Image (cartoon, rainbow, N blue to C red; front, side):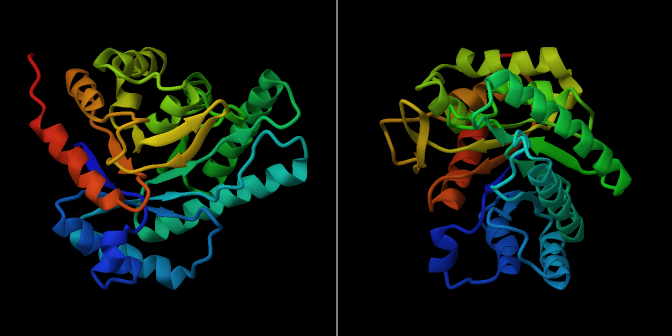
Length: 285
């Protein structure tokens, strides 16, 4: 079943007088949403008791929770010590996700640095093979680990690179940030076919079952010559991308992903808008 929800707590959440992540579950439920992504972007700075408390609140409301691992992960760093830290960030995120009762860990794969593109991608691929081994050794094989497409040219994470990483093992499924793709490719996502061609590529490379419930981040994003500059809201009418063509493509291909709004401050409202658009789209069979 397709799911919609916000990344973190929106301005509307705080304006309603809420403060605690446990309250996010009912807030999402009351809006008619289905999921929520908790960000460990600045590190896993949480007690096990707090993670368990959040998990209980989300279970009570039947809202699925995912987590975003720390932003400073970089599996292309030539230093082995830095790679060890990156393994730790992902595995620690997985540990706390499990306490929360969730299934999905989203992470940024890498930055190119001073290496050539292929050197950085190949190093990332080898490190993700090692991460896979750690995942199984730590009993996290029932979780889904989602390398994300990235919005800046200097970052590792084109659609093709993410698909390449997901071929390593079934524990990996793609996290496709369409705002990032649009920013990286200077406004490439305009039509239903623009989206559909990317989705069909994923299905051809990974198989329908692997892609059916993949992970999506969606927001409008300002971009320049080097790609992503900053996240925007659905009010923006200059940069895009628009959600409706994606909704049509998802329905035509019978895909049911987990869709997270990463709008700047309006993420809960824009998640509701995406769900409304999706439900209003009618396609011809």
